[in-house]
Length: 336
Image (cartoon, rainbow, N blue to C red; front, side):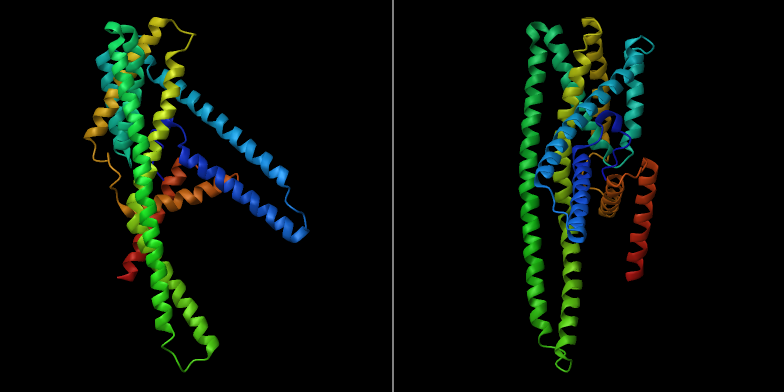
């Protein structure tokens, strides 16, 4: 949904996507258990359910640790040309800029770049600053910035969550009010029909009107929902990169001086990403609603497919998004 395939080596699978995947797997399992209980009289095992829940939690923690390790390995490989002297600092920076420009072309590319860039720079600056600056002042400054950013992320999640909840509650009440008014209006028409036909028509019209109203209200609330999702993504990326950078910068397999040099490389990479991200037009959640809806629909389909054990590649996902957008456009044109 968030078009993250270009930056996946830097962030892994987002927590939102991973949680949705696990949720759908659990939902499929629950549905199978319910069907077995109804058709074969096999009662669900409560103890097994609790054990499965605990196992899922451990699996999620293991998955997160693997995510952090994979990111650390990618970062190590990414800065290798600078580390071994194949590229000067200027050449490495230019290469990072070029990569960032490609990422910025994608959906939400600017947001990814600014989030990743800030996290890489601040983590490395804190590590290098404590060792290289006078009395470790640069390290203290970086730490304060990191804590301030973490606090800001928490506040953003809280505020956007409240906004989204308020908008959702308002939309629900408006849909409910419309249903009540529609019901009252339908009771006054079609007096010549039988009670059964009137009831059938009433239910059909109520369902159609409610669905149309809910869809319209959802589209109105989509920017707020997207803003909340991005606030959660930002916190997730910052936390994950913090641990990934720590693994890279405290690696006992290399000398202390090489660790500091790794930190310098990460600072160059982070600043390049931040610079291009801030200049990018994709550094915002104000994107085409049609594109977001298409990505959301495809995200649900691909998550369900993965939950059932099917493999879905990035190219498959992008093609599904393209087809979904074309179908939505054709449907809208036919309504005009």
